[in-house]
Image 1: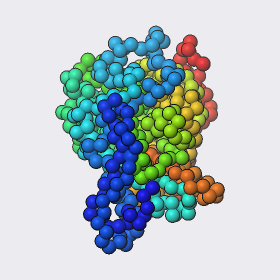
Image 2 (image 1 turned 90 degrees about the vertical axis):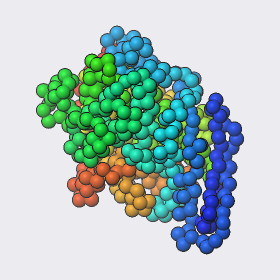
Image 3 (image 1 turned 180 degrees about the vertical axis):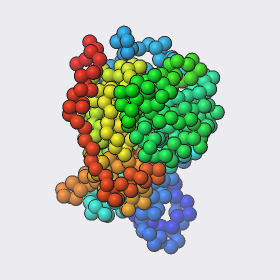
Image 4 (image 1 turned 120 degrees about the vertical axis):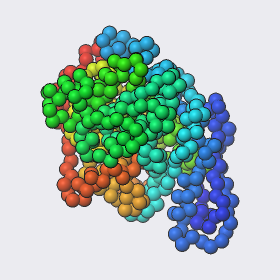
Length: 506
């Protein structure tokens, strides 16, 4: 890593040049750190200010990855295919065409290692990409740990999270096929905001079903969506048959991502001029998010660091996959050997407490059956503040990677997560969204273990968004009103009993 003496100098021009990737995805050389500095007066703030600036500027816009990475191509054991919800046979492109545009269907089943990012998408990515990789030196000092903590910060996007990385290409591919309107679900609102933003850029209508618990908790997310032109409904709603059915059973239902998916899918399936967009779970969504990890590999090479541990929160899995999948590729090659750890909420622990089985992606059973870690498709998690993690299942590809032993998972309750968030905010200055507080809590746990052992591990964590519109949750924590919500074993057993009896189970 570059020394602090170089980085703490007042620099007229600081540039980090990184390894580049050809159109076929092969690297042309190792990254190298080249600093052009004008040595004037030392910065009174020491190494930190310049290090942050250097890492934030570590990739020029022309060095944004030009291809997405598809992990499936490098897995010797391929993931099980999705199944038709009625016939239980592998789905065909025709089965998916009522919901998705042709190019996204192709990406969903692709075995290509790299897929080119369209120039029009790259042009929009440059509004916020590359995103900064930042060393959390003040957090390290607060914890008195020898660990070196880095976070890849996606909160600099217009929507404040990683979600535009896939929203922009999804809307662009729909626009290319003449689609005029897209529909979707959202939990905390990051995905709905991102899709509304992307739709506004390409002139598409956007309609969003937001989980009722988050719709009530986070009114400013709804206002963001509406500002970008989207129509937003609380879910469950009276608009769809799926929503009416849920409300009939429970008029006070807090909703869930599974229910909101059912509502959006129902609208798209019944109108040929409308397509559905999903913010997580599916392969093409995880694919688009790999710009995060591809950038991060170059950024870490540029400063001479290699992660010993990679940590990310998981709900549906797109943020975690986006950071970790390119590193898993390098791990499979034998170039690195980090521990890769997913962190999920204790109230919705699909990886750590769910079963690996074929299940519906939505509550009503309209989507294809996917082999994933699931708590049961009609499981409705308690209304934790990390609304984006309240999903009954895990992305099939992440579930498959977990089954292959390439990663591990733990769950953490929300009070510990917000305690960690406060430590992070008061040392690093960024107020995290509730979702990445899970990754921050796990990072702090590991850093404290390093303090006990004396190990100077390099810990890389995914900071997938800011919490500027989640301050009501922070207020609850600061006032002492936040409590840990845990899952009910009885509730999960009842939900798991309703998983469809697919012959391929087990």
